[in-house]
Length: 137
Ligand SMILES: [Zn+2]
Image (tube, rainbow, N blue to C red; front, side):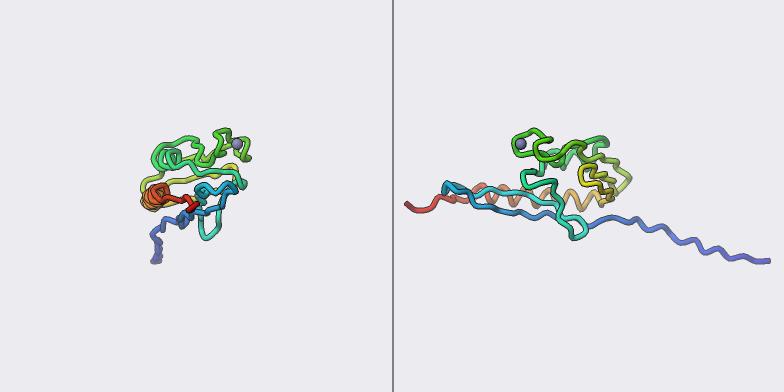
């Protein structure tokens, strides 16, 4: 008896990722404040309104296994923004698994996608910092 086994090549499944910059006006006529938000599979991820995406930790979490404070409070105390467990990173070849413990989510990303997002975010933040926001008096 002849048995034909069709072995399907396993496709790597990964989530789409992008970053958006949200601005909010400050009351004292100084430069606006910026908040980076990570969008995963079309959904904006944040912990609470005071959270802050740390791009240096974001970069470390692409290649270095372990826990990274990708999100933090802008004051530097993670618990202040509801962050207790950080992101557990496990690089797997061209992918990296991020267990977003504070968000109770588990995703795989293409490491190349994360690098692209990081590069664009740094460039945008740099450009924003070069603008003179002072209003004429
Ligand atoms: Zn804080």
